[in-house]
Length: 539
Image (cartoon, rainbow, N blue to C red; front, top):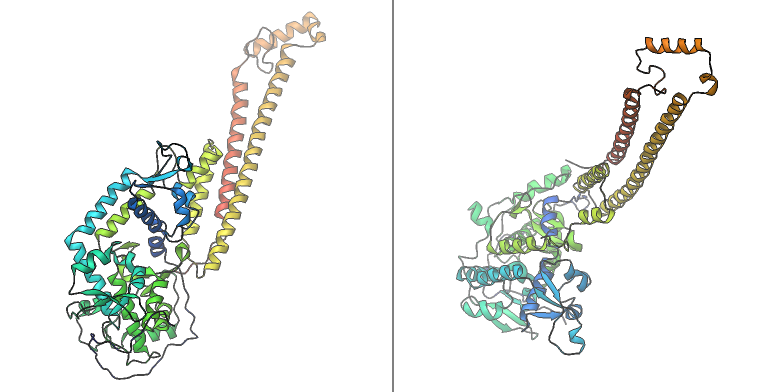
């Protein structure tokens, strides 16, 4: 028995018949060089842990005591979408959750289990979010988005479990069935489907809302060609065959996504352009202009056009970007972002940005510290030369991370190589530090031995020299007088004053040699880091 029922035709949606064309000009043997988009990947990656944090927050708020044991999170890990061990996950965000031991409970295991509660900063953001959901303007906009999504569907109804997949991206509150649906009885109603599933059904059609974004921008008549805006990632390569096909594809007539395109062949370019129009309008309806690929494929399976959606995601990377960040695939509408930032301002996105900012906040007690700071504290680095080497390594790591590759396998291989190079460079730096310290100690010891030897030879002359004849003594005195009595070649002789120029010159020479060796060692380590083979990029 299938999970979803697909009706043959719609009763509420008007039909527009067009010429039946069977034409497929795309060359399937053409290889599409997929490259990453740094800006759009960052948009997806920065919301990595936002959804599980919001789910935990809502669960804690639903408790009467506004707190709960951490053990409950372990039982509800999959429903809360927690990616790692719940205890370790909540402890990563001390600015979001407070861990405490409840008091006043005599005996029992409950007095030992650690509990969680929300921080005052998070409660302030949550109160803003609650006021936003209660505002009349936001409620009306959320109802319009949900209503337009129902009009995109051929049967004008959707199961509630399918809407649940898009609830986060539609910006609907948790209790939208009890709050939004009853407030708009002329929009939709909840009904029981054929297989006993609860469905949200559209009550009446609205020609005012059944106008796509492309039709509003271009103001073209129906059946006229409309070109989609395209922008490709940096380094994307396109052969002549694909470029020719895209140019011809853009000149095809634009079929509105709100029209029933059942008369179009599934293998035609016209049907492919209509499928792209449906996804383009769907992503425009969503607040963040992106959603999981599995959500789109689930909707396509319900509509019976799953293969068309998959083909549209594969053949049109200039319109729809598929990001592989966060261990999943996310479809991002390129038109909705510019330089890694969303173009359309929305109050819900502002609230979510505040959550993300609080997640990345650093506690004064050191609980939330960046990974680079943790490495410095662990190593206890105080040498400025070592700090310069570490900073240079971090800069090279960031430069390597900005490079784009055409496949995930190459990226993973490069990351492994960079980690190996870092470990080798750290070992080389440690060896160079030890060698530099040995040079310093050897030079110091040599300087000390030379000084002691010279003082010993000059200040304590041999007995035979002291027992010389008076003529010899007079000759020595006259020779010393000619040298000005400053010691000359015999510094440190008894009764004479030692010149400080000799010792100072020796010390300055040794220090100059050590500094030169230190500079050469640091330059050598930096050249080793920077001389790694450059990755292949396409500009």
